[in-house]
Length: 327
Image (cartoon, rainbow, N blue to C red; front, side):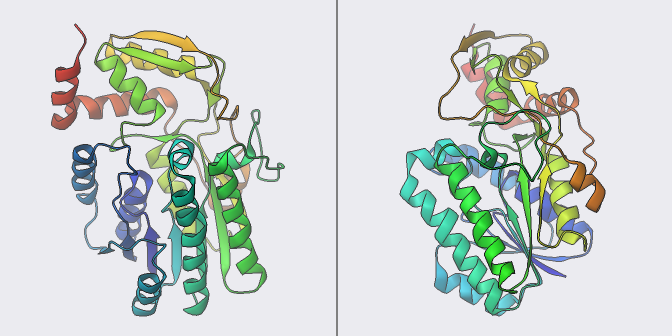
């Protein structure tokens, strides 16, 4: 099967590509390799080199999904069976910094992919959404819950879900929607909550917590990638939506304390809840378990240990941690 993975050099994306290759599929990547204006270019260059090492044969295009002409060419030339759409502004902070560009990528870019998929008879379109579409929620939220997103990132992700479903309503192709949550792990960028906790603790700095009772359903990157690949290849996921998470909520305070214990340094600073972010619990993953055997293996303690170990073994990060260590 020939599969397009947009955003295929991202944290989850490159792991999805590597798994598809090992299973014998022909994979094509399109990725702009952007730093979104917030990731240090030197860090991104390092991460891209390391991520590419996991990918053996996939073809690569540096096309922006907002570029309709090149996207049309890509679909016409390659003739995909399946599309796994992961390219996006990655989180609320980045969208808030430039909502207009975020909307172009998350809405206009998505429409370009959907139109090209329809025109070239793609059979299945997998859309990577987000748990942010739910808004505030407590533990055990299912995919049938009413979505009340807060902030433009969640709103645009939910709008994307409706756009994808509408193409299926018109019998263009089948879709599957995936809602991950708080994915973390080796080769992630520094500007995420777990990365920030780890690096601050390893440098002996301050771990800032926005609301000590706020929780996240932290999901290790390998589990997220396994779930996405299983959903993409399953014949039992047509026109359905799935939570792909560890399904276990951990408070930000607990997560910060785990980072402190692993690193043996740093201190906590607890502030008020960030009003731009909803309160979130654990997501129910029963549907994914039943329909395609999703079974996340890595709990938070093991995942944090793996991530910490990667930091200690990365020459790039060791040089920066040592240079910025607070005495």
